[in-house]
Image 1 (cartoon, rainbow, N blue to C red):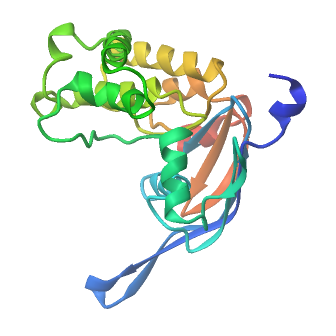
Image 2 (cartoon, helix red, strand yellow):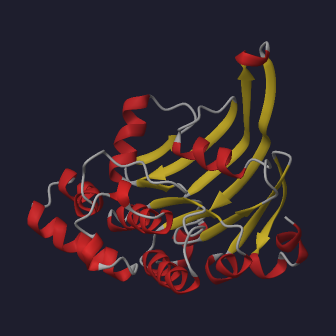
Length: 252
């Protein structure tokens, strides 16, 4: 990737705000994000840190458009040109999710009675890859993440939290998105498996995927992040190179 292209933002978030209306509490408002701005560049990993309730997950959900922002813009450089994810119509957002965007939450939301192999292979099948080849690649990806072969044909609902998390991560990584959002994808993993997950995430990043990730584990953040965004009470407190974050990360 040439230096000029890398310096052009892949994602540019400007003055992003999200306000929730709590109808069960008499219509009271709760502000999750307030005027957050930052950029993410091609092939970069931007780590997001902050105390509980600072807006980290809300930020990722707005970028993925699980939440509709109250104000601001989310300018994404898609293969077909720049798209404002804050205002794009639902059809355009769904197409981008299928073709370019990936999202991993802490919890797997899989189709009931669907085996792990099929869950992981599904994005490839949807894109037209033969089912048999998609399953082979799914098995290889789950193996890379340390999921025992005996579980690859099992139902995720019968698995432990850490095993489900590996299935969830494998499903996102195998699709090779251009922008990947990670919300605590390693929280339930033991140290050995976390190391495997970090290696798999790094491999995709090295291939050019832009990533924004929330991690409470400082060691994982240190291993992955190029830059760090620190959120505090829904606002961007600081954004800069990971090596300069210092105590900001530890105190968040």
